[in-house]
Amino acid sequence: MKQTVKDRIIEFIQWRGLSRRAFSRMIGMPETFISSMKNGTSDENLNKIIEQFPELNKAWLLIGEGDMLKKSCKPESPYETQTSNYRLVPLINIDSVGGLHSENITTPSEQYLIKMIPFTEARDGDVAIIQSGNSMYPTIPPGSALLIREVVDWRQYFGYGGIFVLWLTDGRRITKEIRRYDADPKNYVWCVSYNSDVADEELPKSMIRGVWKVVKYIADFGW
Image (spheres, rainbow, N blue to C red):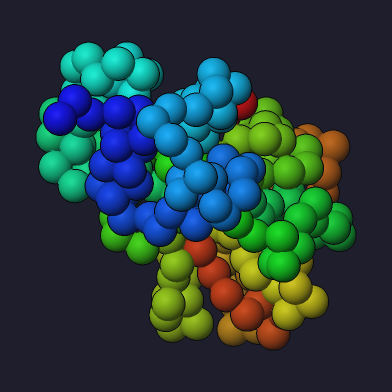
């Protein structure tokens, strides 16, 4: 029997390891979207799917032509490509702000998966979040996607000189280059801003509850 658009959507959902309910929520549709479909759906809904999952080959989705994924995103698994070192990483709707005294745009209760985006050098467990604020500009402009990796043993070894996302005890998340604070390295770190209008500052380690290293970032990824 000839495969329908609905069949291909279900095939893609299964390949991504999503439930039908989760898939429907991700494209802004009711949880019953898949079960209520007949053989196809509207162009508007198809465009929502392509926008949410840019790795999906539109010709395959519409008429079954070609492979399920675009050539640049064709993987061995849902997360790793065959032809390069790219890995699809979940971009989460949570931000890290540049300034030590700035508030985040989103709260932890607003977290959800926006889409999967490709990064080189990504590993299992890595995620991507959004940069907000101007204190790391122009190196990391607001709106950039940050590939981050948790530093579990940061109290023993921080790895000074890198860019990190710090989760503070007051709930905020900030992005800074972290250097050794020579005056009191046991109790403080030195937070460096890249924007010349924003002062560098010391930060008590007692204010830090979690640390993620910024492995890579994408300054313009085509929202």
